[in-house]
Length: 85
Image (cartoon, rainbow, N blue to C red; front, side, top):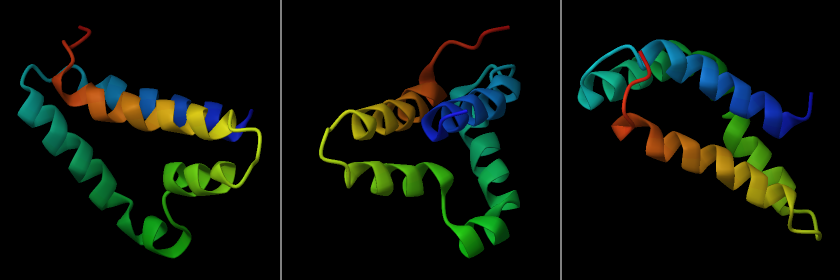
């Protein structure tokens, strides 16, 4: 599985459970709690999405960095999206 597909799938997995919460503030709090629970791994290895974005930005073709940006845009739009229940 390509790295950008893995990041998008992981984001879908993470937000899928949180989508059951009716209030966007509760969804955002849940996301932060999930991130905090993985802070030791992130401190040691870095953010998978951030690392992906940095690495693909080094490519001259300019296509993969746009795909990494799509994953980040999904995350930014997610907290206020209508829950899928």
